Length: 209
Image (cartoon, rainbow, N blue to C red; front, side):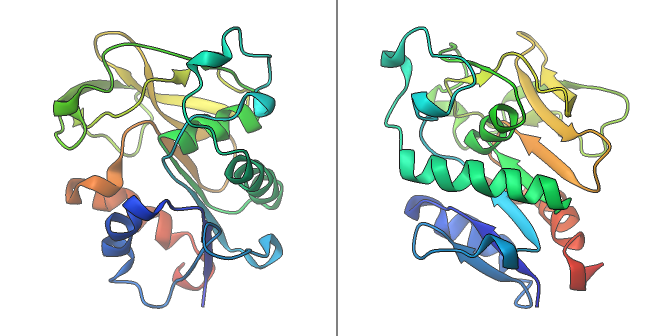
């Protein structure tokens, strides 16, 4: 049985559960609820949440007041999990804050506050247009949006796959020269149109290959 590790906030439990429901063979461990032994993982899901705590940034934040509701305990687990998974070449799927964690963990930096990407009507509706690099495997012309931070300097290990069509905010990346690693700034767990992303991720787990 493949073992998937994550830290999922309570408000997102049901959203992720519906994508996992067709796969009872996958064991999910939520580090919010109980300690997770990283050495037992076959894949890592890094999900949405509050801003990364100041002490985990690669560069000291110019204005720490822009960091909203940080959770240092969660950040410590996620940064350790990303480093462990990356070193082992495990499948990694990073979502919203998870994309930001992935970027910072691998050496990148963030814009601490941007405008126009967290309007109420964007949270559950796919209204944000994207443009893609020609090599992107997963392409969604319109996506949802619920974030006020974004990637600034992109880690060398990451390749950009998609940008916001109007302001060029980075919306999707893959890990360069890596078995399977994808990060998205939008929230695929909120809509069934993104099921192919989850299925592709799950297919990389050992017993599902």
